[in-house]
Each structure stands twice: as C-alpha cells, then as structure tokens.
Length: 251
Image (cartoon, rainbow, N blue to C red; front, top):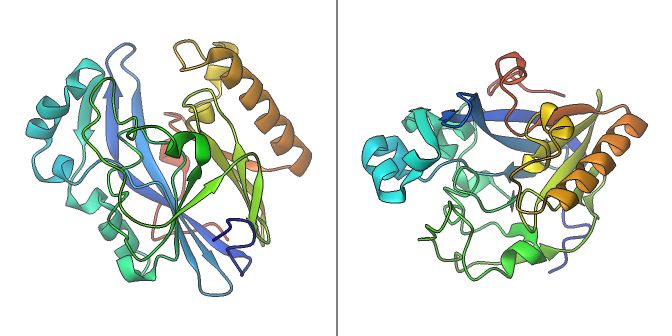
C-alpha cells in the first residue's frame, strides 16, 4: 500500500496530546512529551507519536531503572491519563478509531504504544524502519518492530489533501515532520527536527547528525515562513504551557 494519497479527507482539526513531563539532566529543562491527533472531514483519525511505554504510567521508577533513563533525565509526570488511549478518550475516540499512525522517529518518548493499534498502518521513514530495532534510548533497544503493515516514505510525501510528511533527518536518521493545512491555516509539527527554537542557534549540538539537522531545520523554517505556518516544536518549554491540549483542538 502506498503512503501517497492514503488519507482521503482534508484535515478538519488538530489536537495536541499530553503524554507527560520530563526534566533533562544536563540543563534542567522541563519539557512536555507530546503527540497529535488529526481528524479529517472524511472521518479519518491520524495519530502522530505515542509517548512513553505504558510501563512508565504503571510504575515509573521501575521503568526508569530498567531502561536506565535516569542517565538522561527524570520523568516528572507520566500517569494513566497520559497514555494515548486516555488522551484519545478526551476526544471521544478509542483505539479502533485510528486509521493511521505516523511515527516521526523511534526514540523512547515517541514510540511507547507503537504496536497498540494493530488495525492501523504505521507510516514511518524507510530509513528509520530499516534500523534493526527502534532507537528507543541510548544502547537500550528492547523493542522489536511490531508485526503490522508499514507505509514507508522517502523524501516529502503528500499523504492526503492538505497533509504532507516532510523528511527532516538529523535528530534521528529517519526523522520526519508533518505539515497540516487546517481551515484556519497551516500548522507545522516539527517533532524533534526542531525541539525548540534555540536549537537553531545552538547548531543542534549533540544530534545524531548535526549538519543534517541544521539543513533540515533551515528547510522547515523556510517552508513555514513561505506558508505562514504556526510552528509547534517538539519539546519547547516556553511553548508547551501555551498550547491547547485535548479535548481542545485547533481547527
């Protein structure tokens, strides 16, 4: 099945999903863990990223120890209400309503429920899918690829009218961003291609490929400027409290 044109309807609204809060050890930065739900006028529901694995909501400390995530930071909050199913319920949806998953990249805070929606294909970059296992965190890679249908994309692909996935490697080998044309205007979901605006001036120090990250961010911001898009960054501490969260939506 091809990703191009997979989505039939035009985006009707966009919800920001709250998957919890995390504190980064190296700088004390407190970041929101987010996903998105895009609904179309054809009744489709597209889930973008799924937050931490469920074990973080049931026993956070045990999960942190098991994955050695304490080496990177501290999970400040991740409860049952921060799991995808709970966030979807705020919008009157459940797992069976999801028609497509979009995986922007395979780090731990983006793929926790990757295999929890077996009836929906997973859209992912071919580069990321070619990895032996999802990246998860550091050298901890416990997850296998879920046995379900994948829509692998290379480059930019218009997956439906007003809905385009954009290649943005650098933070991760197969990082992607998402451009969404809503009735009110265009939104650019950068995911971790640009986690916060300051990363641009910092030249994406510490990224998987810093030069690629710089080039990707430059391209994304030029596209955003050209389209007069509202940019939602991957983990921006200043922006996170100001964003509407489910059940509120952008439309």
